[in-house]
Length: 260
Image 1 (cartoon, rainbow, N blue to C red):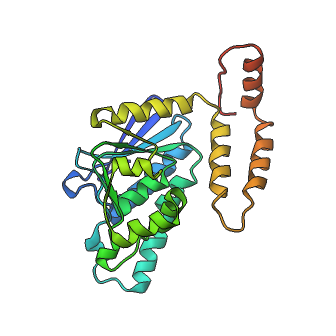
Image 2 (tube, rainbow, N blue to C red):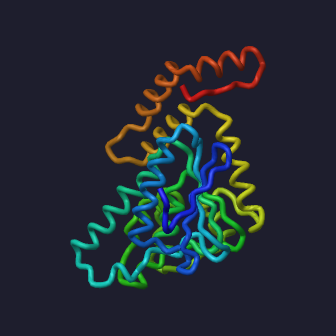
C-alpha cells in the first residue's frame, strides 16, 4: 500500500515506521492513525518482520501531538469515539503486539506523541527530546491511554504532576523517572535503537511474544499475571525454538531460532 503520511523502510528483519508529516511536526491526524493501523497490522503478520522501530521524520519532532483542528466542534460522543478508536486501532495494537516495538524519540513527543511512545515496549530518546502531556491546557485530558500508561511507567504522583501541570520534561528527566530506557546523542539515536532491537531479534520470537503478553497482564485489572506467566512458560515447552535453545545450550553453540 502507498501511504500518504508514513514511510515504511525495511532493514533486515527490522521495519521502520516513520510518521512523515514533518511540516506539521508529525502530528497524528485521523488519516495518519488509519495508516498506522494498517502498517502495524501488516508488520505484526509479516514473517519477514521481526521487530518495529517507530519514529518521526526530521529532527524537530517524534510526534508533536494529535491534530487538534480535528477536535474542534466535537461533543462528548465525538470525543468518546476519537479516544476509543485511537486506542483500539493503534495504541493498544502496539502495546499488545506479538513483536517488539521500540520508539526512537527525537525532538518533541507531546500529547498523542508521548502516548504513542508509551504504547511501545521500549523507548529510546535523543538528548534534545522534550516530552509532556499538555492536554489540560486545552480543557482535555490524555485520551490515547496516557493517564494509564504514564502511571504504570512513572508512578501515580509523578504522572499526576506531569498531567496537571502540563509541563514538558527533558530527556534526562524522562530517564531519571523511568519514562525512557536510554538517552543518547541525537546522531546515535537510530544506531542505539537498532543495536537494542537486533539483540532482541537474536532471541526466540515466540518467547518474545510470550514475554510481552505476560508483562502486559501484570497491569490488567481482573487478570492474574502470575497465571499468564505459568501458561506462557508452559506454552514455550511445545515450541521447536525451546528444543533448539536447550540443545544449543548443552552443545555450547549459538541457537538458531525459527519462530516455530
